[in-house]
Amino acid sequence: MAHEKHQDLLKVLHECMEACNHCFDACLKEEDVKMMAACIRLDRECADICGYLAQAISRNSPNISELAALCAKVCEDCGNECKKHDHEHCQKCAEACFKCAEECKKIA
Image 1 (tube, rainbow, N blue to C red):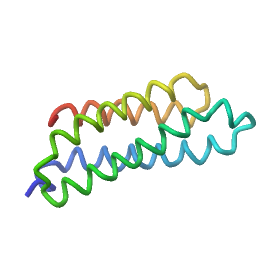
Image 2 (cartoon, rainbow, N blue to C red):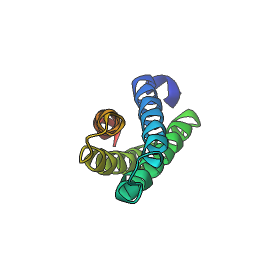
Image 3 (cartoon, rainbow, N blue to C red):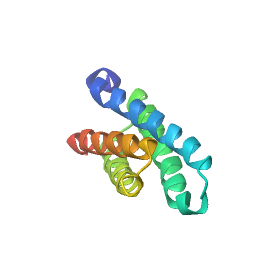
């Protein structure tokens, strides 16, 4: 089964999704929310694609490699945006995103 074969990726996807959701929530509480708009948008998109890829893996989708390639791109985009901000939640999110992108590329 795909979910047994991709245990490491599933773990990293979950970690990235959690980091993005935390960053999303924390960004909404920042003083200048407008400045965080791109970060918030990408956090949401990244968390969603990570969750979707995890679901696709669990149901042995024939599109896992294509979804992993898309997930890697979204994770990189999110990581690049987050690393622009000095907030700790953004820096941790960027780290999780880049780690996830690397794992996704292994099966893309």
